[in-house]
Length: 360
Image (cartoon, rainbow, N blue to C red; front, side):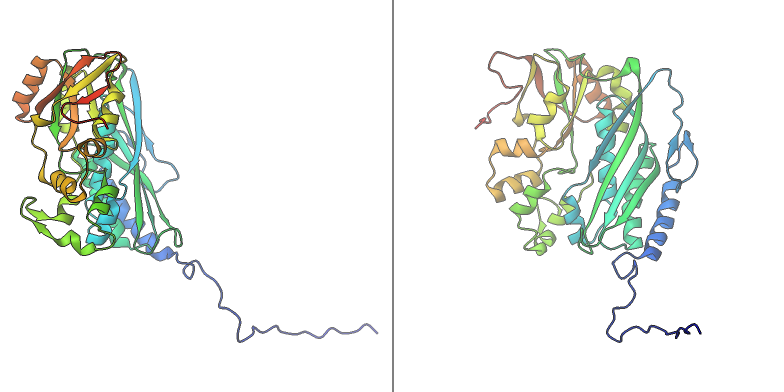
């Protein structure tokens, strides 16, 4: 006779580990879903003509309208270590403004109108309300520039980020008529540099600022109030990146070139828009450097050359144009200061000469 098999039930050992889930690994799917619903509602407030479909599909779609020969202009960036200040100040509704405005300014240097924006938010732990605050800033800045927030991505990555740490990056696409591309080719010797004021550090130089004030070791330093700043250090450092699109878009026909003063300061950003054979001479005494930059320089014993290599020093955008056009823009905007001029390069001339500042 065939042997009968004895059926047995395998029982878990009392010492066995509980079943693993995504939540136990640090990813809360319910929190992620809640965050996405909050984000969708905010993103929809930014929609403009050209948006195709809704938030949440696998790809975001946009139809470019109103151009005969559109040239698409794209850029991507992040907020950098300014995010550390936001975490320590527990304030998240302004760094989204920083991100959008930085990207809008970058493509605007080509003469482009912003069309749509996508964000990327990576966190160590998803807090839906915190994510919503980030997107509130993104949405507010997008609305101000008539730029649609049509998609993005949120990612929870425990182990890669500490629970309260996060990263924020973005991607922008704009358009400009081919015949109106602003590429610096019209810049000529004798043009002047019209500097538009910044609102603070914008999104650059925060690693140096954090080191100078020892913020990572002494977060309390952010809450110290300075009379010259009219605010606490933390409030001054979180001042949002200014957007120049609405200010200058009506003057593009009078502008030969634009330089957005971001990472690399004056020495790296101005040459990016200059034709070969041209440089600039700048008089740093032609504008008042805001108190925050003077405080950083004094506290850190930083050389002038280093300051102008890292920070915007109170000038966030430079328009290069004829003297007559510069005066007209100044008059119509009631702002801006002529800080220098475009010159023909000599054999041994640096492309950016800051008068009175040693190169070494």
